[in-house]
Image (tube, rainbow, N blue to C red; front, side, top):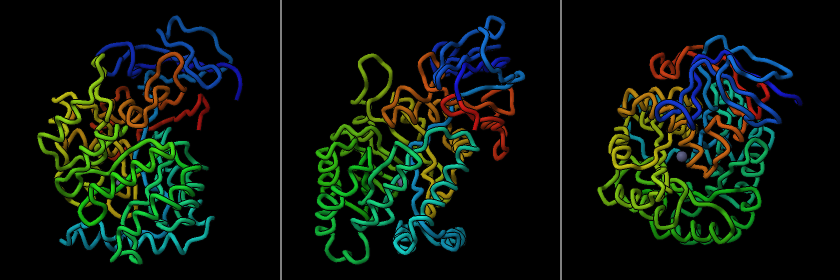
Length: 395
Ligand SMILES: [Zn+2]
């Protein structure tokens, strides 16, 4: 769509840039969009003319959500496992193998349909950028095709061949790690931007994780890691050691883990180079204790929120739901949670062109059916996303 577009009559504009408070809020504002980018931000009364106009009617406008952690390439679901867990059985991560079997048996078109369905579902809830991981194929061919299909829906694709050791390698995990670092990585890398490992007891230990992440780096991929979700371990510190963009979950952290993250702080005070991405949908859906967001925020660590959308431990695509959980259950303020769900996610993907609404940024924005961002946590479970634009194009 060509020509300029003006969104005006914005009652409360969250810029995450210049304005009031940590969210950079402007009142009675307007945003001019040209060629998919924010061209101007200012008072609605002084807005320039444009080819087209969207009247926000006094509502709040925010940057689109950036969901930096999602597993969308899979087949089947695990509703029965969820029911069993809610009836008292613990979550161990072992159910991943159930989804691996279903994914391997699925056709490309079946996988593609699931990715598109979930991506569209998230978009309706305001997610304008969504990272997508592989990790339910766990063969050279199935990981490569998972990433090929993921890349049709996102530029933020992540190779997670090290999600779990597949059943056929159960008694020889070293051989599986060799496969991941060798032929699987070679087949996956052309379709991936990131490499990730589920570093956890029962999945991959620190030595295996290091070998895989270092191989991924050598192939040109950026590093992210599933760390310290189910118990304490060396995942967070390994992520920091390797310069990871993000360490994800962070549910069980030692003082040394927090100190390691703080040690990655930028000298300009803009936060930490390695982001701690919290995934409260996983704790909600596995009925587990939530990560201590306040401890991280008070220490100065950059925090992101993401859905962890996957069929086992967190089958939600809703960033507003995660914002509400973060506020109610993790003691984040509404402003901290909205920051973490937008620009925090952008930092976790090392992106500066999204998560903000300042001149030059991508015109990815959402218009709420509410006068303030506060309503995202204040009115949980309510569909408050009135309109979504990506690259300035109404969706
Ligand atoms: Zn995950």
